[in-house]
Amino acid sequence: MTAAANSHGLTFRQDYFGDPPAWAALVALLEDTFGIDVSIQDRFGGPDPTSMPFGYFDESGVSAANFSGFSMPMMVDGRLVKAAGFQSGAVRPQWRGQGLYRDLMNRAFGWCDEQGFELGILLTDKPAMYEPYGFRVLPQQRFLGAPPPAETRLAGTVRELSLDNAGDITLIRRVLRERTPVSSVFAATAQAEMFLLNGFFDPDVRLTYLDQFEAVIAWKEDETSFQLLDIAGKTILPLSAILGSFDRRPDRVEVFFPPDRLDWQGTQETFESDISLMVRGSAAGLSGPVMLSPMAEF
Ligand SMILES: CC(C)(COP(=O)(O)OP(=O)(O)OC[C@H]1O[C@@H](n2cnc3c(N)ncnc32)[C@H](O)[C@@H]1OP(=O)(O)O)[C@@H](O)C(=O)NCCC(=O)NCCS
Image (cartoon, rainbow, N blue to C red; front, side):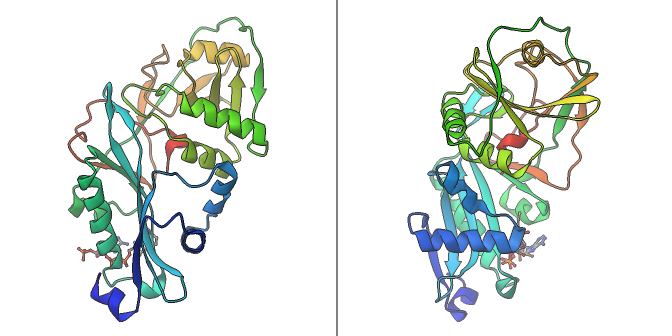
């Protein structure tokens, strides 16, 4: 425990999501820090059961500081990699600048190493803070181009899903459990919680179920382009089949993950964002152009 934590009477706790008041205290910390309400996860089956939160609480149970790791198996360069994601890093303003977060980073990255994770992943607007711990920024690329030749409209039904519908949530969770990674270059293999949360937080994201393929397509569109964010299904459909099923003929397609399984090639373009993707560990020497699907962001 840090001297600052001692002098403020803070208590360290780890792996505390089984305690509802402590989970509620973290929800409040994240709401106050980032303006997002992660308690919505309760509607989607609760927080990720692999989460390993590290936090400091004051005497009345207020969450003063937190940093969480979670298991996030990834497909990287054709290989299944045991990866950990890190998220929910926050310290309340009155407790900042005293080393609390340094303490929690050391604990979380130590846990990651003890557990034998080969890759650590995080997204941040403060990359310099994580460089001393071995993280490096991985530039992200999206893929743009003309659509493939149109395929005739395929059989089967195409249905828009709603995250307000319990049956649709169950369907999405099942499909996510059974999914094939959307890319063999860089993709999450089984992460349901963030897919649902990202779909909920961005009202422009549309989730469409193709029953013939038992696949959920996450996508957006504007006047000129069709934006493919993710595909959750047992098989990854070629882009031509998706556009054929949707009966769409966009001028342009943008793909937000490596398109190696789409039977289509786009032109790479650097994805500009204030948020950097950072990686650390023995599996961090990636070769291909990468992008973490926006549906897997955390
Ligand atoms: C960023 C934040 C978590 C830091 O917490 P903190 O308890 O004040 O941090 P610490 O005092 O433990 O400092 C840890 C290290 O990070 C560095 N650091 C702190 N804030 C930083 C910032 N904004 N940018 C870069 N480095 C920073 C410190 O200099 C310190 O480095 P050192 O170990 O070499 O001395 C806190 O300011 C916060 O909650 N900010 C708002 C939410 C946020 O940005 N979260 C991080 C999301 S990735």
